[in-house]
Length: 394
Image (cartoon, rainbow, N blue to C red; front, side, top):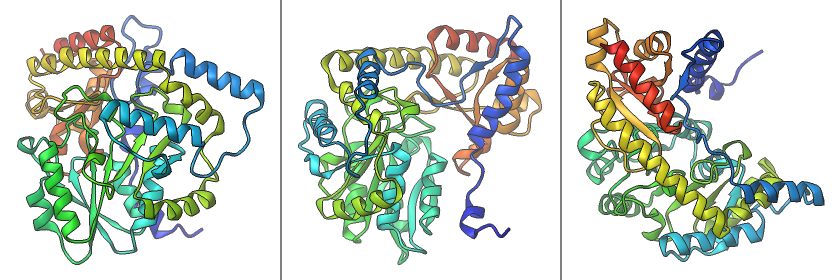
């Protein structure tokens, strides 16, 4: 059987490979007094709040499970629009909102609508690996540009200007970012978008962690810049609906019909039950609960990042959003006689019974010296993880 070149270009998702290894370790440790602590997967430990669960059950009970329009339920698009107005003071017309089968489907639709074979898309290094693979699946090429702590591990306008060439189609950014939890400063984002617009390119921005921003200067949507921004968002992170596979895309008016045609053919529609459930995300009681949880995520960050620094696992930029800590483990590797962050991650599983993610997935810019911790676990687990790491590293 001949495998397509497209499929062969897609590298393994090492986050999940490490997760499989961690699960095997966990089985062995399950009956001990030191079970595995999973700080490797970026999934909230909270589930959908009560009103959302009740709405899903009601949809199933009432038989409201038929296909919806490819763009999503009108009522849900209107609720998302109202959330932008309430949370960010933005007037995003419901007609520009496309409900999708998770942010993954949103990224796929955007890439298929806008990228031709051979087009290049500029992205920061490090960045979330699946984003560059969506570009590759659309026959484009992701160009990873090394970033530094000085720029919050984000691209700047000067880099976009210097790396742009005849094949460049645009930029794909993420703010807040996975794996670093850092955002692009609004002034820098405006400058980047200006560079892209001058060259007739496209600005795509992954905002799936935007609801989990902890700093007002960064917690604003890029959609405030103008209507040409294309934003990808999701119900997975802030709204705690990971397995429900529901997201959305905000596009310019002229792109709505194009994306609709693609969605009709590729997906028909997002999950009907998930859409009806998501309507309840925007009830006052649900939003109050999400804000309580956001405060809890911030408290976890405020404990865990300084604790990592105290262990010599330096986090060079304090995350301003999401639930990650991007830590440099080079000194610890040298102390332990380990080659890189890959070896460090497996040694941490074996010796401290803490699962984390090595930097390999996220690019090439010093990623062999870095690991990603997820702080989307309980405070008790985070405290235990720090204690275990401290004993091991000592």
